[in-house]
Image 1 (spheres, rainbow, N blue to C red):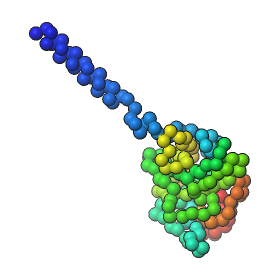
Image 2: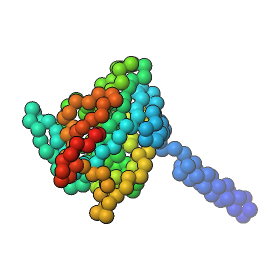
Image 3: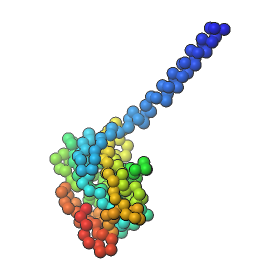
Image 4: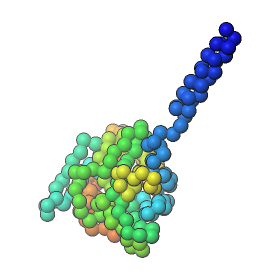
Length: 212
């Protein structure tokens, strides 16, 4: 009887040990997940193959983009978030084409595919020693504008590679729950370069120039 009870205890201990190992060991997705590189807005984050610094975030009600040689106005049910960054390759030619806006609620918004392609828009081809100003454009609810984090990587699937995570900080909201500095129209078709004071945005109502 004693021997049987001992065997049961040993078996129970073995089962418990196996369960603990199962629930505590890293999942495969965690083992091959991108390696995070953290920074705050205006800080330069150094990933494996590129460096990036967020220069400015502009929120707009309407986006103007060039599609097939014609200018189109793009509206959205939320707001447009246009992130201007400085990008450069570290040691070899590379491409940065993936960005995600992660709101304070934890919801994620990938770069908008409605904008299309054009100068300054992803994917961004980079060469060492040739920094460039680039844009990432998102559509998101106004409530997700504040307390967000920007995630940038070379591609959508980048196992064991770097992923930059930049804290964008708090954004003042007005009584309607929209960003205080929301502009009327932002033109993403204008050419940009490193250090440019871009005048692609116009405020609601008076449509005066707004540097972005």
